[in-house]
Image 1 (tube, rainbow, N blue to C red):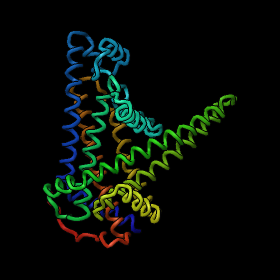
Image 2 (tube, rainbow, N blue to C red):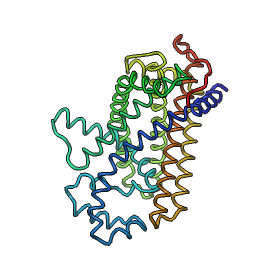
Image 3 (tube, rainbow, N blue to C red):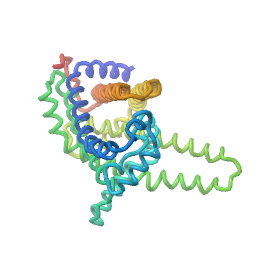
Image 4 (cartoon, rainbow, N blue to C red):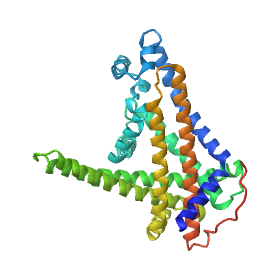
Length: 347
């Protein structure tokens, strides 16, 4: 099967670009530390004179953290603290926000107030917007680098990786803006209305099972549609790089056309990669629950394991770009989509 061959090729090419994956992981880690260190300094200034340090090391205490946030009500950094930032609850929070479109709606609201009302939202909104923007810029740059290497120059060096990242950064960023707008419109005008219809239609139902079933079906449909859209945007990125396209809308139309025309292969490949990602999350969740975070050393161990998980996420993302690029080159009728000869990548 074609998608299986592309998956094997993706694993092989990602395995030969280990230095590029480590570079991407380090860039993400440094960005995260740059944003986390000011928060840690402010936490230390608040906690040091108190007896909360040992208590918070033993376990996350929601009451203590909420008291701290109330005492420092004007702090943008402490206002961004949330229980879902810790441990495996992160994935539950992200999953819930993903299905409800919290991220794209929040970004849309931020941009609407900034552009049309000339108003910047107060509090932790600035910090979170900076975080989303910086990570969005980083991922667009890395996507251009990885796809460029896998599509055009499998023997490329770190210099080539950086060159491709810069060359396609602007085009991929415009595609990301199109994605944010499309997702925001879907959530605001379609998914939210479906949720409200379920709530009003089952308000007088005697059984809680009826709305539960409706919400399960609705969430499954939303998850399926978002997965298909994400896959279409992936192939739009591939087309931008492989065919050297300048138009984000044109690349999205042709990328979606390719993904839907070869839906059996593209969806099977995407599903296999999603299952691998879910297994990584399951392993981290088990480890997080198994290790008692009751001392500095166990907290440090969990942090190192979490960074190992993040490195695995970058490896999986690189594998995804490599496999999808290979599948596009195998099945595309475009003359620009020529499979490059196998070569040893500089690692």
